[in-house]
Image (cartoon, rainbow over all chains, first blue to last red; front, top):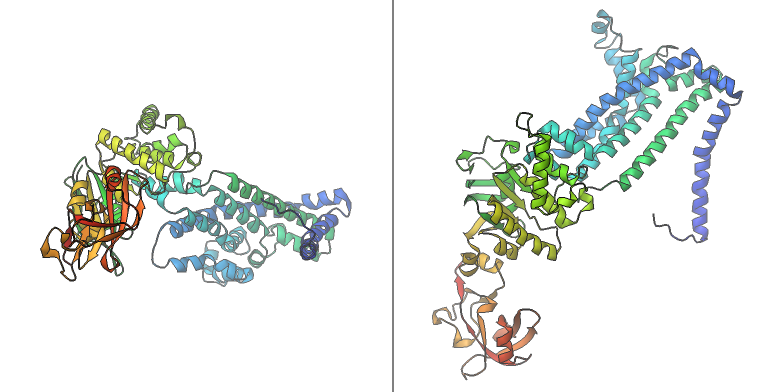
Length: 277
Length: 343
């Protein structure tokens, strides 16, 4: 970065103060409150809130959900990005806008859609309950809703990156005799590695933090279908503030780790050997 | 392996990128596809490689094999891209080894023989000491040599090069094209390269195919297309040329009276075919020297004739000293060779 020498220009100072004030009010203060409240009644209470069976179940459910959602979105994201970035076909603009659909739809609506399809009175409800398969108010429903909400993250990171790289390298690989899988795994994905990791990090953060859609499909069964964000809400509604903030601090830590990883990946991207064009 | 194209066309909507091309590329020769940008030369090369599908009705053959049903990855075509298209995440030696590593297990050489072949190829392109570097650590000329080694690794039947020196600076271009010519003399792989630079095509190629608007204007050796251009386009595209519309400079001094005064005819005269003489004859039309460029092996002299007609001549330094030309001097010219194309 080429930093300009700092001049004490009144406009500059005013703008900087405004930005700092915003950051303080909307980022730093809430962060302090979360950790302050979490430890308000001491470290013992904090630990107790996190090791409580219901909290442990929520942590476990959240991890299980994320570990199912990320592979699903990885496959979808890579496939979609590859199609869009490297091939021309009719209906491509439609596919591009369909990928953005989850961004445009309120997560609550997304959750409701799944209830309408898989719920007891939904299209597939009778068929599912005949076989005693539980989708809504169970882990599969939570995974479905979360997958839907996080669908764009990996594809959206990959598409511009892969488009910018062009097709020359893939064509070169093909001319040297490589088949489709070899091109994908030996050329396209290694070159898009950083964008891919970045997409995974963002997807993970959103998958663990999703509230609206999961809230609709989970049914809030304590100790069974409550994920971390839902558990925070439950505790908060019970006026158990220090426990609520203790669990919330976990999600906050996740956000901070995500931010750190994101910065690190961007740094790597800036210093890694560039594409040869 | 020879390449034969018959009735090859490629349209994009209404635009005919390649228009009914018939072309035989003999085995072992180095052929240049030469033309201005948009003339269809790169599209034609990509059709030969299989990267573009020609329109229905044409046929493409290597030797006697029809390629319509042969997929790109089985054509054994070596292809060199203008922007190198090296894999940035692989070292130089792994780039070169790529084509061998992706072979089906039964045909794949052992690790040891892959390493041997890569070493040989890097030796061939004079980059043996760069094996462990990454493409981003190489200069443009070095990258293009890696790309060439990589293309040769699969022992291609034909080698196709798309503006291979287009992204390089002038000095490296010159070195690399001479080196490519020597390499071709050594390997004798049937090669086709695309260029918009006529000097490059004339210096490197055995045969030059000149294209314009998706069609072939002329096929011939560099000497043929230079000295016996088949069309006005070729004449204008290959080398410097004076274009005269309707009348030739120099009054009665042109080689054939038949040409004189033919309104609408276009005459082409190479600057080297314009002979400058001291003004001697009274009836000769005089031209005025306007500019002299004497830096270089040849001296370029620009002259102004009647009706502000601009004439450029090229003469040797020796002849230039003999004539003792200076700006504003009045001279007469004789045209040694005039080409006329009726449109």
